[in-house]
Image 1 (cartoon, each protein chain N blue to C red):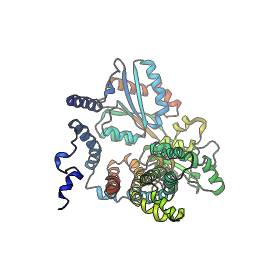
Image 2 (image 1 turned 30 degrees about the vertical axis):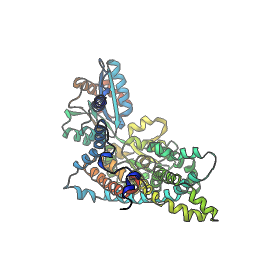
Image 3 (image 1 turned 180 degrees about the vertical axis):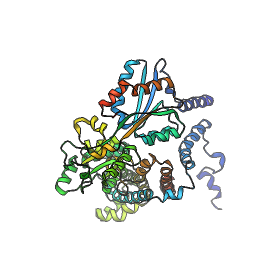
Image 4 (image 1 turned 90 degrees about the horizontal axis):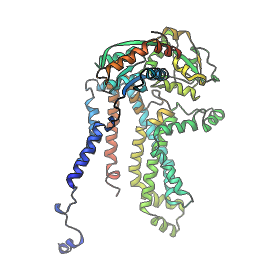
Length: 251
Length: 278
């Protein structure tokens, strides 16, 4: 009796430790892609196009702030492909030794102002954002969109005092969509994806600060060939077309 | 010495052989459980870079976050006592119909994920919220993105700990002393001050510490409802999260601050909260 308890406990423990959910994927190839939050909509469409050509492949995404993902990869999070929203974050992953080969740039992006559709604060230019009483939300400088925000501020010669600094560009967008902020600085592509929910206001300084988006396959990817194939697809004509549709620039 | 012969019949001998023994198969999971609790904290300590630690701990970002965290948590705890204390009394002593439902509702923030709490607060008190819109239009008050929002989020999440703790101890103590006071002619207010309050003091201590600890650790409701800005709304947990995006060593150093505060809290609260109230 005692032994049976012990064995049962050990089996349970082993099952928990090894993760018993790995069975049942036979015959189907799985690709895990960790990608910047700003790639959410475009990469989902790219997946659909890729899977249409490779019916035996399933792609799992995790869209988060690039920096958070980079740190998770450095800590050994298993994944096949990493796509980041700037070169600085990608360098972190490459330096950690988890990248297989060099990263390749596949798109560019730039910032834009977004305001709620009725533009309650009457924002028309970047300088308006520095006005007193404007509730502006930006990304924190620790993440790519925040780093881009700092550079845009320098180019425009305008210092912003945001009411909140988010860790993810989608959080900035959501605050504007929810009407909790008068304006936010997000990527052109996020404004595009939000459609009618926000109005976007282009400003000259944003054209001088381009974020490049690199992608890399990771060391110990479960299926390196598939990872390479997916990356080639993203950079190929179909991938380019979809990315352009969402407002990304060509590399 | 005179009672020596009677002692054996009054209580069981206190020798080691009479102790309840833990079944051997339970030792393994018990050890795993302990490891699960302790090892991650030790893992955090191994990530600390001692040469950079002093600079990281005294960085403006860390100090601003620590300062804000201590302030807001103390205010939230005080608010929880002032509002939650009376609520505990009402729940334990009054005989209103539907009190069981109210008691269940009070538990809601305990079981709700804090992020959901933050969203709930936002849709009540945000600019587009029912009450928030009114506050902004009539009084020109905006709550999100302010330190008040942090305090509100912390109170929402932490106050139930105080209510549950105090209510439990009130029910355990029973209403006998209060009834006696009433038969002796004391009014409700006098009874509360001279009988109920002294009865509550031991439980109040441990509940206060738990409430403070929960407020200090609040993350989800705060980041959703209050946003994140240094010195205004970025408490230690938020600062750790933001900093971890780019500088893990700095985030670990800040985490160390919270671990130290947590240990102090445990040491202070231990006699009453863990070893049962006397």
